[in-house]
Image 1: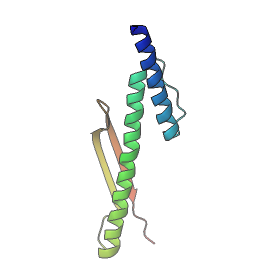
Image 2: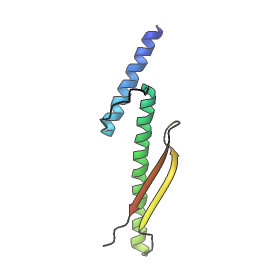
Image 3: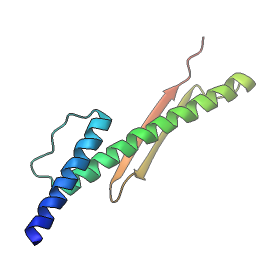
Image 4: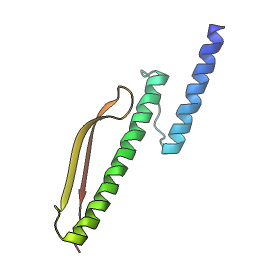
Length: 102
């Protein structure tokens, strides 16, 4: 019975990994030395990093609105931080944005 549970668990993890990869439009193969659950965690951390960067972009747009209203703001916004975007998945995230002057 334990073997059947392991197979069902493996099948479930594979379905989840496939769904996440399809959503992210990621075609990368799982490294041979990486276990399935570790691969899923890495995918979820990558997804978290992507959304974190998207949030930075939103912050940049809000800052730009303030810049247009007041005329004062640095032309380059930078942020670098060590973040835990998923369980035990510490990543250094660097984002940079420049305000284009017209």
